Image (cartoon, rainbow, N blue to C red; front, side):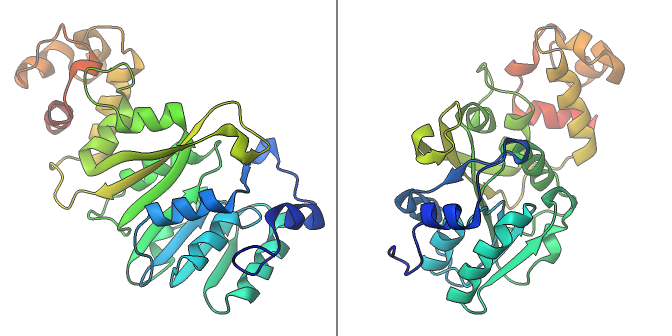
Length: 272
């Protein structure tokens, strides 16, 4: 038995036949020391409902409950994992709710009352899309207090990237606009089953209470156009949105490139 009184995850995976599926973006994290570290990075969970996406056999789920989360709501698409998660729910009566289904079709804001934190080892194939949805929700401050998420290191670097760096792009603008984001720590590929091809990183994002005012959809259009042709001057990449006239109205040199603009300048373009 492991520290939480439940069987080791490798035994759980073998007993339930839970070999990870590439089509579902699955890479199971079996090291309970690392799952505990992720749970601690999310902060004090005692009075919090934690939303987890893609719990798989329940490694991070167990760490969240063992760390004192008042309640965990886990969304799992893979029906093979439900029996293993039911065993975790039995071990922590009344504290784990498992929702079978697709996270991309889930209204997360309706899953709980009171304080919510999102903590997840996101499936690689939907992680970025979910993050963008959580960053661009219409209502702000959002339904969550923080997000503690695992991504491939390259994606994590794009999320926390600053203007003027090669990694700065649409994700950096959206995350920098509405949150304070930082990389908490890296997770080596050997910690997963099966090992992914790259190092992963856990990132912690806290919503800014009063981000600069902008229309979410318009900011999305500006960033998509600007970084869709990031090697071109802005007067060309933003041509469909007003081009040189728009840039001059905002006091921005039309010969600059997208990665040199600050978040504030992108907001100015969206508002114009």
